[in-house]
Length: 236
Ligand code: CA
Image (tube, rainbow, N blue to C red):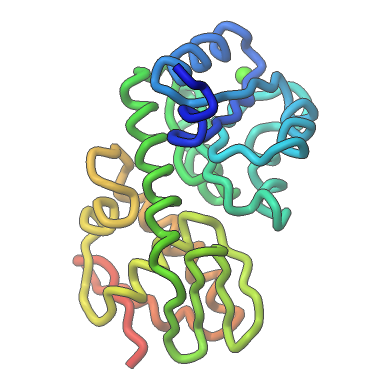
């Protein structure tokens, strides 16, 4: 088997996890599924690996020695070179309320330990498919709001807007499906992917973040809440 071809096909995943046994288990599962991977035991090691080559996705443990996974996710989102890398947070049972915080800080998804390899791989596939699928769609514009799927850039009247990959996908879906109300479940299916088990309130968290991001430029009013149904994008 040519590992370079495998890598090109499926991408490289960076595992940031301080427990060697979990790193080993994750690495083994990824390798068996055809992904290339690298391992870091803390955020310093992760920084070095990211500086060498950007991974296609990061599995990021919540509880790390030194800087926590959540703070690290926020830092990655703050840098132009790493802000578009999909991040899945690995959380432990008992950290449930913090999942919302993980998403607020820039993670795209989270999975609670102990998790099944199958579930994790399904989520990795969904995130990878989304980030590669969007690359073909190019630029969309609505009233001075521009989304470029090749670069993940959003601009409002030529001004750059900082946005996470999940908010980007959500906004992209809305802009390309305007004037129609979508339920949380429909948005989960369309934006997060089918067969990915994410709670419905996750949608609310991301809608809130998206509105906060757009509010600075006056575009938050485009994202409308339709009471007891869901959300709609309307520029009219
Ligand atoms: Ca840990």
